[in-house]
Length: 100
Image (cartoon, rainbow, N blue to C red):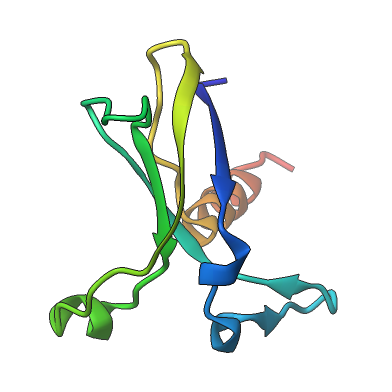
C-alpha cells in the first residue's frame, strides 16, 4: 500500500450534470485528487476537484474544488497506475508465449 488519504467532500459543490451511470447501473462522479508537498493553513495537503477533460484544461477552465483532506500515512512508495489496456495487453502477450 502506498498511502492513506483522509478527506471530505462538500456535496453541495458537486455539479449534478457530471453524474453518470456506469455499466453496472451505479451512479458515478469523476474527480481529480491533488496531493501537495506543503501543508496549508488548516493542516490539509490534499485537494479534490471535478475531473477536467483535455478540452477544459486547454481552455484553462477554472477548477471546481469540491473537497480537501490530508495524507495520514505513507510508506514512501507511491507509483503511477498503469492504464487497463496496458495491463490487458501484457496479460495477453504472456498467454501467447506459453509453450503449449
